[in-house]
Length: 425
Image (cartoon, rainbow, N blue to C red):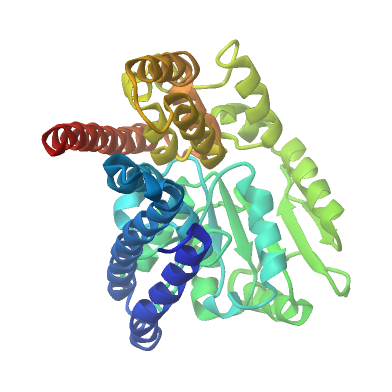
């Protein structure tokens, strides 16, 4: 039997082998629809491998120390139960190891209200990844950052969330720049970016734009183009070997910040927030700043910025605390999940008795069910970016149903197992 580390390595190798044809097909076909289909197939492959690997690992952990007892429960029921419990968090762990990330399509667009859109050339995707991630991360501390995905990507890269669309990408961009709270523009001279820049210029959206320069030569060419086409004068920048960010102030001048180290990114965030105080005051419920989230986590609704829809009692979180925790992707969910399930296992013991079951149920009631029922929705809100109330409600409802389904399946599993044991005995 495989141990947990061995089964993890085995799953990773098999997954990479099975998805290799998909990766090659996507790269050469360059089709948005094929990207979406391949990601769905890859998810199903990963989920199936997770079930087998978790069952093998659970069998190894439970079977070996108890094999001498010839106990049916220890040999079969306990490993299967452990695999059932561990399959979902194990799937998240494997997804992280293989680089799996959530992808979005046009269906996601109506839910976007509070977000940043990232405009750039596809040619810049593979250049200076760390600096690119640092910039998108700085802005994603406030609102989630979205960008149009490349048609040859098997897995979305780290940084901005990718939306995969068909040939109507121009309509999508026009809609996104109009509804976004912040526009991040990585300046270059490609035809597609110049078209995106023109849309922002025509709609007078420079007041919420952040311009990002990583090549001085290209920036000079860009300035010549926009002066010729639109008669615009952008600021003259010093010829330094560093990235530069600038944005327009209310008096139509530009604030320029040279990004030489991490402290300059922090300085940019402080200045931008000060210069756009109205933006942050009006959208404070959707900000993702760590300090704001921590303060609200401590207060739990007392004079808080948590919307009314994210407050109140949750019966699903009460009845299914462990799976609600996992499916809703609450912050530190894996740690909390393993703490809950491990303590429940210790209290219940290997050989079930009426006393141990009652003790386990009391533990779940006091330390999992009641706290999650009272604070589950708030924890979900505080743990993630939320682009709108409607998106929060939609996601909360979807994953709540998944938690209920897994919990019901787990209860049915135990009922069938107990009845089967009675007949065997």
